[in-house]
Length: 251
Image 1 (cartoon, helix red, strand yellow):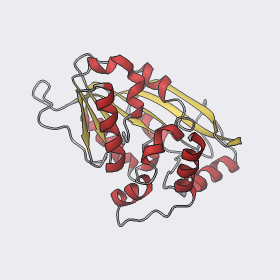
Image 2 (spheres, rainbow, N blue to C red):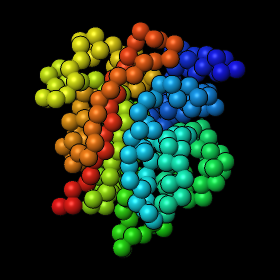
Image 3 (spheres, rainbow, N blue to C red):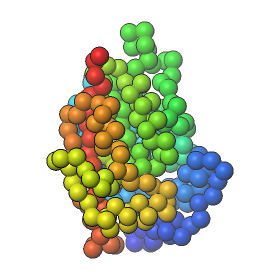
Image 4 (tube, one colour):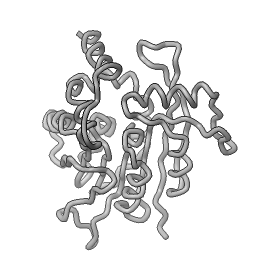
């Protein structure tokens, strides 16, 4: 059953055509046929989420925004700590994935979670979220979603705008290094820098050499790490990914 599910997801990843006039329609075209098997397959592909989410301090009574949150699977890494938050907002353009997220929330009894079919570059907190006269988030997270947002830099800027001073931004995603990375950063071969954007780009997933420099420029770094992960069914291939946790400067 698991292998059959993986085959179905692999078909959509490798062969199913992606149609649509805009990013919302293309995302729904891509995910609609694989939504049910999405989490089981990607559990072996999307590494580093648990470690990063467990590292994020939970602000009691705080507001958490999960940008490109899809099925809400990453929120499970918070465990019972999720109940300490006043509200959690899952933002995604794919209705098929948000439907799975709603079922997940019902199954876990997450009564503080809301779902928004909106663009991460423009999402704003609802008027019902009021903190000291302003709408501000304590935490904004991107779990393997920045690579699927064409204007990812605008999504990061919007997250920074949403955050209160001292708020946290966390991101985990695929990446490729710049040809000449800064000191202390991984250097990737020409093959890595060429193959992964080409292969993942078939599904409109774009590993960028600029995520890390931009995140580190816009936020004060609390935690940063670069890793390699093996891919299920492709044991000879390793894909690079990063973890980032940063703070919005107070001034």
